[in-house]
Length: 233
Image (cartoon, rainbow, N blue to C red; front, side):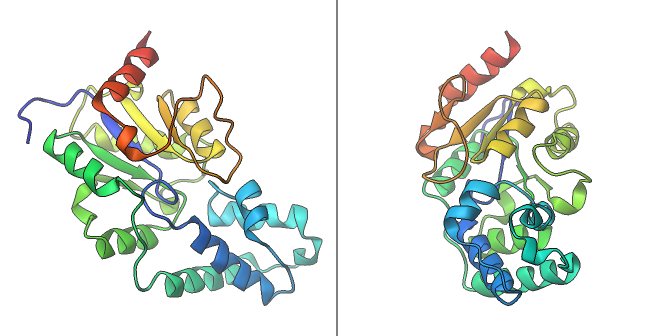
C-alpha cells in the first residue's frame, strides 16, 4: 500500500456500476406491479427509472400508470424489496473489472465511497456476498438523505464523511462513477468530476463534455488525474 497521502477519492454509484443488479430491480418491480394490475417491462424501466430511488420510482409510476392512482406506496415498496431480496439471495456478479479496480485503489490507498439510492441492507448484503465489504470506507444509502439523485445531497454527504480521513479534500478531488443521467447531474451539482460507465440502456447522452468509459479497466490513474485537473481549471 502506498505511504503517500492520497490527493483524491472515488465515489461510486452502486447498481449498474459495481453490480449487475439493475435488471433484477426491474424484475422485482415488475413482479410487484403485476400483482397490482400494472405492467412494467425493461424498456420502460431503463428509459424512465434507472438512477432513481425506489420511492421516486413509485412516485413517477403514477404519471404513466393511472391504474396505480390508489397505490399504497409503503406496502408496494415493502413487497418490491422482498422480491428483490429473494432474487438476489444467491448473489449478484460484480461488474467486470470491479475486483481488479478495487484492489488497485486499495494498494494505492485511494479512499473509496458508495453513494446509492438503494437501501443500506441491499448494498451491504451484495458486498458481503462478493467479499467486497472491506473495499469501501463510506456508504451513503437512501436512508441517509432526504432527496435522492439528481439532488447532490448524497454526494455532498459522502464528501463530508470522507473528510474524516482527508480534512482538506475538496469536491473537485472526488471523481464520481455513474451510469445514469440523474447520477451524473447529482455529481455535477455537487461540483465533482464524473465518469459515465456506458450502458446499452438508460437516458445518458454520452456526447462531450460527458467523459465516458466502456469498462472499469479504463479508469486509469492518468484519466482520474486529468478529470481532477480539468475540474480545478
